[in-house]
Length: 399
Image (cartoon, rainbow, N blue to C red; front, side):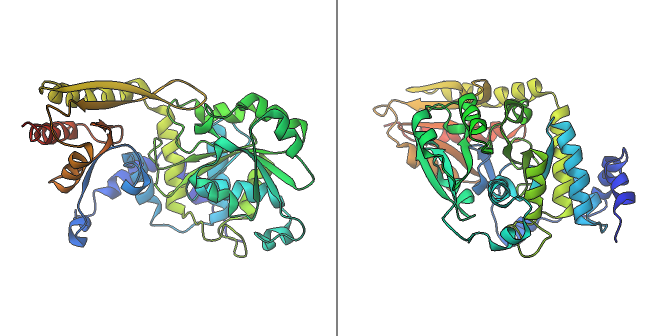
């Protein structure tokens, strides 16, 4: 048996970051994107996957580079990383997944099969009647295909009474989409109460539900059995990584469905050693950072853009604090810039196209005679470029 213990002690000991930081400086800089002909974009729209999510923190990059030069037993690494993450996030169990979508698939698979090897091999074609997952109708969304990958059928409900009537011998799980909280009639506590009444496990999608930082343990603390987070958004870990948190037995079952095991539904959802360690260090670093300072920096960036374009005739600007789902707490500042179409004769789509086709390319959000600027994932200094370019494009609309 291959033992990973000595190496893991080094990975999770005090010397990881310092050693890896030195390794980062050993390679000469080479502009691979330029060689490939891929333009760099200023991201003024948020942490969308199409724009590669967020920029990894230096500590994460250091961890990845340090880990790349050694071999380990992947199962032992997942064990140790899962223990560390679960301890930091106050839950029974945790695993690093291939993004939040993978966490949804593996979490559902765990509820379907447990650790039954025969059932694991049969997924997504379990014998007998099709298994069912209960979901509120308003909580259906594009990414819930990750749940359906396991072969289940969604049963949509809108009220408590409908939910209770929907439970039957084929029901295996209840699924909650946190961003749908405001539109759903059954809120978190009642949803959990009903699931526990019927002995059903619950899975909640919290992929983008950060900040606030305490969301990382809020939902397991409420009683959700499984919680999925993205690793490549606010946490600023590897874009292809995610977290599945929750009940230890279900995490163990999810592990049985995933890489490196071969004949499983999750074999293709690989996470390598670099991503596992990088994600662990991302969580550690995210918990330790000064979140008020981060918010202040984000506010200063969008305020600079707003002040710069707000002086234009016919332009109004407002900083809105976006809120999410259950918590109702302040999330991130987003600048909304609107204009009088009789004064500035340019459509928002025209300005968006001009911003992305210019140099440097800048992606912003759009509305009706308005655009939005979200610099949560950008570095300090890029707000000056965004402000100058947006000022130029708006100015072209004067008749």
